[in-house]
Length: 619
Image (cartoon, rainbow, N blue to C red):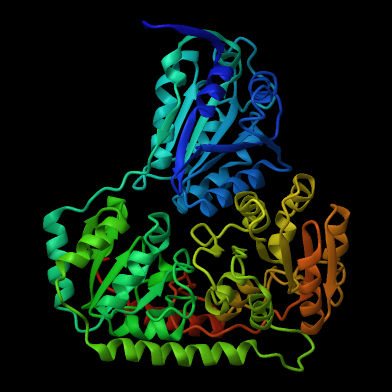
């Protein structure tokens, strides 16, 4: 290959390469890979762990409790770092690797970087079948790691030690490309990890990576400016891409200058503070009446950094048939969706250039006045729902309101699937930008606590993640409470105990189906009238956390103040009403039986047909 070389095993070379990759955050050079979450087993313990142990002062390794949750923690970290720094997750072969597939799906759906390194079978196949190997009779090259192909932006299997020379730079480039960002997966054959090779020393030279900022096409930018100038009722939809482009201020200033209200997607919530003068609330199925009212009448919609999923668009019922869309996105795939005028480019640069192209154009001032009035009405509704009452069990809205009021301005709220995404998207009032993480791209139950660990690690003590989780998600994945106790990364976990999978029970009932297999009282259990109750506080205490159970909002308030004083992860549980929700007025398209003997199902089917009549055609 020419030049000086160094003889290393493949695993040693891989780790040395990762240690020499850097990025810049706020002008300072920092390691691109901040650490490794690892559960060691056969397939990564005898070679990869040997290499990681030698560099633990440069690339710290953190012990996970579950392969899925440690990869989810890595995703939470990447989100907190706005895709500027990446964590690694490594597992053994077989079930250990497959446990990470769900996390890969989360990263893929949310366009977030994580490097997944899984052990694999022997490249030479001599000892086949090895422990945990799943054999495919007609194709011996297939292993369980092929399952990651559906949920990876970059996928490779290393069968020869020299292959990492070309593979690793491609993996890093994919994870840092804003148009292609997502998980990179590399399978490491066991015998390949041990092999020594004379690697060129140039491969290990320090390299500083920078996130590219592609400029938009001039012609498309001109078309976008001309279309926006025709608008009588323009609207900006801000998505998560605004945050990852570091374009929050640019988009906010643009909105104020041009007199255009901003509504937020779930991933985009937190781009603005709640009381920003251009903010008109979250949009869509779990959005606000204010944002949805503006969407219904919008004639030109400027969508920035969003893939416009169904919860944003109300399954494409939230907009008129005649509305025109301008989509600003680094990803061509996202920009060209839904008959949009696609402006492919970085949000920060594109919005700056679009601002110049608009000259002195500005929307009519009454539009912003209308948006503020609608948003004020929405805020009054939320205030009413969050106000304490004499009800024996508090609602989600009341719990969210109490926690929100207590939270510090820099504390990050973390949640995911179940009833909480709707309640926090509607009711959480962001105090500082970048302090809201609701994983709803993949709606992954179990993300919450694991991601809280990632956020705590990313904050390095500057703020305390507030994890809000339902009892269903808690039961699915809670072991990283113990991880944070071990590692010293404090978070505050609020467990809303509503006795089962309450929000999906709500959907089930709403579509005419009696409660079935969701709430514990509707499940096949020994005692339906009094199913055994999980003591979440005692469970958390068993993992080393501090914990309290609250029977009222007053006790919750006291427990939250106490949690501020504790020295480790603190868990607070509170019974929460399973049937009371903040109302929403956007539709959602779901499958409802076309025929049924149940009258409520037939009625729900008729309603669903009416919903579909409102959908935009040709999207």
